[in-house]
Image (tube, rainbow, N blue to C red; front, top):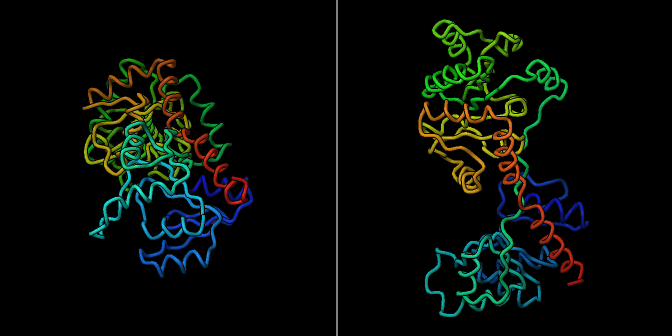
Length: 349
């Protein structure tokens, strides 16, 4: 809802209210709690805000809110529609209620064809498959001057990033890099550990046990030509490393769950490698995997093999482009819904 609210406020000059959203809203966008499911609460809410149009998402139907909006001729739309649902904390809804509520929606934008069929079976008269709305940009910032300096230092070198690497996966990352160096002796691994406390221990281990030349970011050491590993002090500069690394392994995905937002890597053009454990980032990892925009690995050996494949610039670029497409999808859907709502709100629909 954040990109949609921004479009409505900035592009269409509308006053926008968002309910129930924990994320910070763009400047000028209002936020309030959704009304309770009683006639008095809904009427007080609508009397106060006096909306010119309304949008619900995903599929949950609020009977009193929808009914009162219909009574007031407030046009309603549904976006990112998955399946129609009545609130689960209320028993005894009468037969035919869902069909009656859905008949009051002038437009329902379903995520996919199965979702559209679910709405049609429930009695919705106006359903269209448009896909999901735009997600808030996951692109992380960095200092451009610093990126340019490091990019010149790393020119023509293959680079991969272990992002959010937990302690329990340090050994497999070291083994993968050892194997990758046999394929490309100039390969550089950038390690962004899950916590800053692990930075010095892993740097020391790579020097003392592996015999590698290591650059420490916190000591302002540069990744010169003889450096095999650059260790960052945590995730504070993740936006910088994602811009420099053509391939990124999502740390935690082979043990207890992904530590960083996969869409951050996708938005910055890094090819994504991950294991089967997505953790809290399951939906994002699933979208990338479903679009064949990532490489799934099951072990440290698989990770090394995937790095070998991504030594091909063409292969890495194709994967990164597919991931970027997933991260940036939905813009047209958001623009279309914004145009629809703006027309209704201005009395043009």
